[in-house]
Amino acid sequence: MYEVGLRDGLQNEAAFVPTQDKIDFAEALGDAGLRHIELTSFVSPRWIPQLADHSQVAKDAKRRDGVTYSALVPNLRGLEGALAAGLEEVAVFMSASESHSKKNINKPIRDALAVLREVTTAALSEGLRVRGYLSVVFGCPYEGEVGIAQVRDLVHALVDMGVYEVSLGDTIGVGHPGQVETISNELYRSGIKAEALALHMHDTRGTALANVLTGLRAGIRTFDSAFGGLGGCPYAPGAAGNLATEDLVFMLEAMGHTTGVDLARLVSVSARMQDLIGRSLPSKVLQAELAQRAKAEQTQTPSRTG
Ligand code: HMG
Ligand code: MG
Image 1 (tube, rainbow, N blue to C red):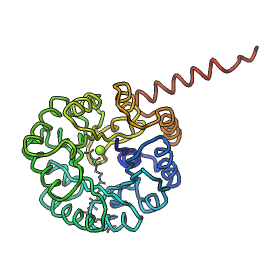
Image 2 (tube, helix red, strand yellow; image 1 turned 90 degrees about the vertical axis):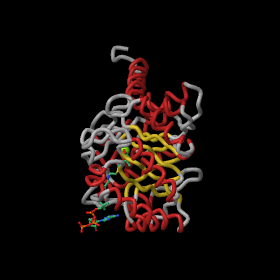
Image 3 (cartoon, rainbow, N blue to C red; image 1 turned 120 degrees about the vertical axis):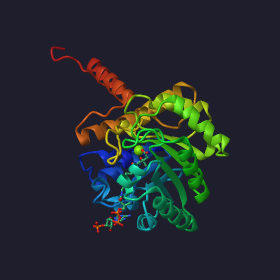
């Protein structure tokens, strides 16, 4: 499980979550058992003001054994920031459609590939692990359908650069299980291993868990999610929250998989985030668990008349 709430979630929140709270949330997510936590993005604060405090968050988040912190880096300058903050892993990102690429990073795909190659090579030579994101794999908000050959070629380009894993992004939450099956089959057929893939689902249309289940059956074992279901993409209109970590943990554990995540603790973390940003988060499991807690509290509290 790859927790992206502090990055993909907060980049899309109207409210700026104070720096110390972000650091506290990172620690609390680790306490809840998450082992891969994306902290922030070393991108332009003019593009993503919510994460303008990237250096402070990445520097001050308390390190712990077994937990890997990562951050998005769009260029060498971002990589320098991540290195200065002492991160051991970074993620490079690009789009599978030209229009989303230009909106998201102000570059056509060909230029993006050159930058990602440069950043990945430099990061690897510094001993960092590099993850790759490919966005709008399942559909683009500007162009609609994205060709499977384009997706396949870009996944290969990322793997050839040296990323250890490519996270296939359903940026606007239009993906369906049939696509997960077709795309994973095409990638396997072309020589990509299941271990090199992750699924990054947004739950805009309610298909995220069905897509994960299909990915699971196709051999994929890494899934991105955001606590509470925070999230979206500011340059993809209509992108709603990421698949909620609570919903993913509930389903996987119920199926007999071990996630290592303590659901009760995670629910408390997301409840705190709801209070901070002043709105209910979309995770169904979170809301069900909170409703149960409220009910249990009610039955425990003696009435005034005794
Ligand atoms: P640009 O305007 O083409 O490039 O932006 P630039 O080099 O001319 O720089 C513009 C400004 O950014 C300058 O500042 C630079 O100094 C500054 P100004 O002179 O305007 O004040 N700058 C930086 N500042 C801080 N850190 C840096 C950095 N680099 C330049 N590393 C750039 C190009 C890539 C920087 C810009 O387009 C950008 O920051 N984009 C951010 C896009 C983004 O973060 N999108 C969301 C993440 S992707 C996502 O959510 C999808 C994902 O979740 C998967 C999925 O769902 O599919 C991963
Ligand atoms: Mg995303």
